[in-house]
Image 1 (spheres, rainbow, N blue to C red):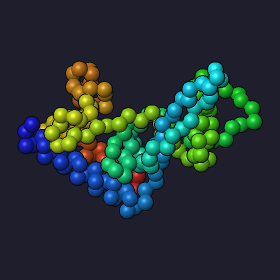
Image 2: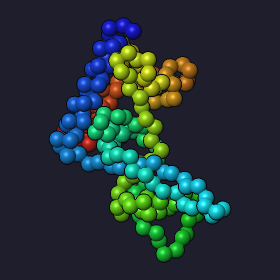
Image 3: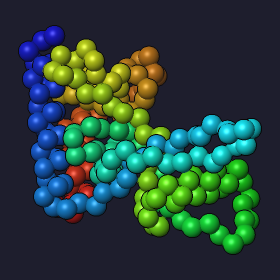
Length: 179
């Protein structure tokens, strides 16, 4: 690993720490990161899913950041709502959303709370780059995020699908805190 590459990972880690400090200081709006857990049947009786609370996160457009500095790609999002008096779902998607909302409500989440679930963890490097998420790589001294599954030609990505992660964080933090 080149010294330039190692320095890029260290700069990104420092920028993430700065973002966490700035968001905490400004009291930026947080959402909940949860996990939808399907429960096993008991005596052949199916039970509905439950929502497990993982942490509080800041939504940075398509990424989520928690106070430990962990990054996640947004998965699915639901706002907790109470069960209606009657159902009038016109699609399987609406029925699934209602099922998730009900699971969150039954699991102790507050009405109106925004819950992110199915988020994908973005593993950052320890400075060596070897254990980093496949969508991250160092290009011209900057850690860039490929918006596809894997970087470069393997994913058939064009040049517009690559963005400096530090610049992305700067823009998203500014948007969230209104600076």
